[in-house]
Image 1 (cartoon, one colour):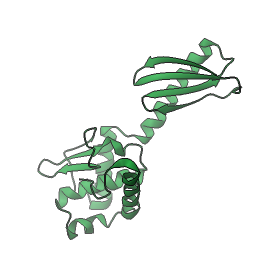
Image 2: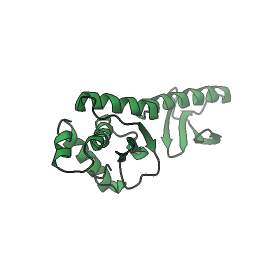
Image 3: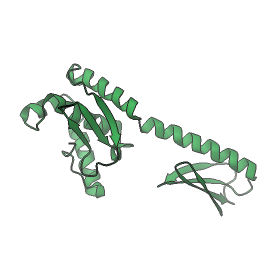
Image 4: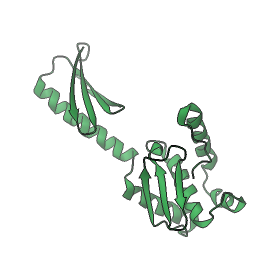
Length: 180
C-alpha cells in the first residue's frame, strides 16, 4: 500500500494505494485529513480525477448533514411555526465554535440564538431539539414549568436528551439540559 499526501483547502489529503483493491475507490474524513483509498494500478491522472470526485462527494454529504447559518435559520423558523405557532421569532440563528460547555444559547433581549458546532452531524431530531430549546427561551427565559410545558410539544424531547446525555458521558462534557 502506498501513501501520498498533499494539502488542500480544509486539510491534508492522504491517498492510500492498495494492491488488493481492484476497482473501488472510497474516501473518509479523519480529523482535518481526507483519506482516499484507490487501487494501486491507478495512474496519477486517474488518481487526481478520483480524488477530486471523492472530495466533491464528501463535501456534498457534509452539506446535507451540516446546514449552514442560513439553513439553520430557516430550520428554526420552520420549527417555530410547527411547534410554537410561529411565536418564537429569533433575530438570528447561527453556528458558533466557542461553546464547549453548552449545546446552544439564547439571548432573549435581542433574539439571538447560537448553536454549538459540536451539534453538527448529530441526528436531525437532536438538532431540532436544541433549536426548539433555544426558541422556547425566546418565549420563556427560565427552565421553569412553563418552559418544559412548551418543550413537551416536541415528541422526541426525551430521545434527544438521552442522545445528548450519552454523548456527554462518552466525552462530550456537556449535560443534556445544558442547551443554554
